[in-house]
Image (cartoon, rainbow, N blue to C red; front, side):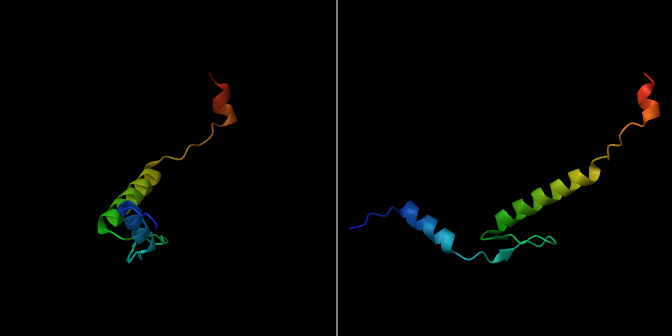
Length: 69
């Protein structure tokens, strides 16, 4: 006799379940089983993209200005 808990069965079901909801972001290949998980993923991707766009490029100091202190 094999003892299997409900938790183990539900985990197996979720792992074997297809993920029909695909991400709509260009170049992203992730898929999800729940709309809530997709929306959380999209929000995190958008916030990461916004942070990258808002970063100012760091230019190294020129030799002339670095000697003047």
